[in-house]
Length: 331
Image (cartoon, rainbow, N blue to C red):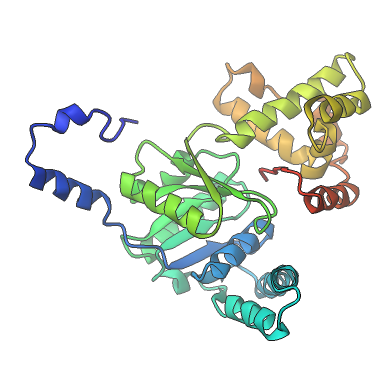
């Protein structure tokens, strides 16, 4: 991707009036006020919550009314926890006003046409390229030409997702982390076609919802998962070779590197199937990259249905968050 304004000298001979026109042209993307979130699962609900909390008007979309009702109830419960801490020792009416005001910013619907007037669409549906293509193809027809599209994918190529649309210059990645209301990071991803105005608008939105924004090109896993997934796979290879036990690997990384979880505890939490799925997807696209090679022992556990110990470790994760550890999950 060519760098924008990479050499100031190349503009030195231009009249100042033309330079000002160029700056205005790059910054004409309107502020994002109305947001549609596609998918009401854990990530979609979290994105809807932080967007509504920052006073964006949110349309939360899913295919099933029951899922939407559940998501709405979960968002309210999450806001009640936030309000209890935020307004501790203050008048209870302030906390209730915060909850009601935020919930009032969220509309739930099963109709895609209800998002036609939004400024930004954030997709948070399952990691299936065909499914995402089917959704974005419909949205491309329904939404205004100036509407920006973004995917919350953690493992798929933004460029590949965007290929089904006619607005690849207005398409980027917004990768939030789980749980969205707690985690302070969002990765903003640009493809070779993402316009400077789109990229700037997505970064501004990330800041507006209270996140620390880091930007990255459209590389597998972006920043966090590009480092995290090979680390998890290499831990599995280490044990597969018989070099160490999984218990000692976990303890070594916690005591030696200061990590709140060892790699096998983290594998259990995010799910062995999720990690295996990502590894196979990346390996298919980058066969010459040994870091992305699938791990047979991991695949065998998935085939046996041994996917992880979510309940035990989700409790451990809550303890880590309570004590203020910086801990990330890319899924």
